Image 1 (cartoon, rainbow, N blue to C red):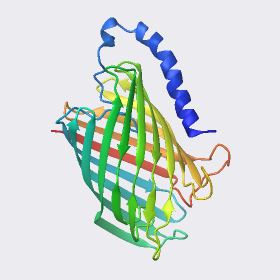
Image 2 (tube, one colour):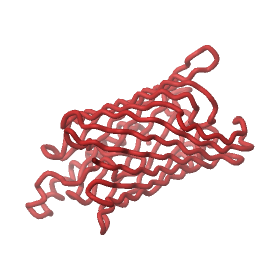
Image 3 (tube, one colour):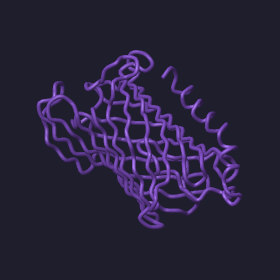
Amino acid sequence: MSSPLASCGALLLLAALMFPSLAEAEDPASNAPDAVDTEHIFGFAEGADIGEKGERELEITAYGIAGKSGQYAGVLNETALRYGVADSFRASIGVLTDYHPISGVPGLDDRHTLNVFSGVSSEFRWQFLNRASSPLDLTLSFEPQWQHIDDISGQNQQSYVLPVRILADMALIPEKTFITCNLNYTPTFARSGGNWPLQNPFEIILSASTATPGKGFLGVEIRQSALNQHGFFSGRALFVGPSFFLKLSPAIVIKVAWEAQIPAETGGRTDLVNYERQEIRAQFAWNF
């Protein structure tokens, strides 16, 4: 992957070139605004839809991480309340919880701890384009967080995380098949001694999801993560895996995604020091 921006742009350009012919093949009624809310239908990636003005949503998202040398696992949870301030703007507030059973992992202290309150999260999303007037959904997300527990080691460590995300998605076949590209830049200030060194993780996710019988979506995605500590895309990991989304009722949806780290396309090996071998994301969302 020579450049994350080039890869994302190439995917969306290909979809844009395909879109007119796909639209022509559909029934004329399919030219109506898309009824599918794309936010949750992908895996670790997210769609650009944000809901309507006045819409309220309770969202519970759990991340499971496992697969370092020794016995290592972690469960990171966010419980958030989201509110549609306007048709193109949404704000959220949430609390963080985590659980870490760690034993015999090089570089990490053994621990078996549950932190019911490990931090506070927030989110502000602006949607600039939507499929009602364009084949492309485009949203900017800013998600400030404060944490007092380190996600990987489970030890006490204050940090301020300032993720900025660009979310773009497109319907290849209206209401049936969608693709998305997420660009995630996550400046992080984590206290170390008396200093607050800056970390600059960057991530690109390319994902596709298609409708299944019974109000579900089945997807697949590839995710490239980088620490950027010693140059752009240094200390990186490549993940791939499937996802499944199901709409249980008009107000309740769930999804599950699993990804495994595979050898990076240039280094030819996995990085189990800075990353895990496997990651799982499970999500429950209730509109009320």
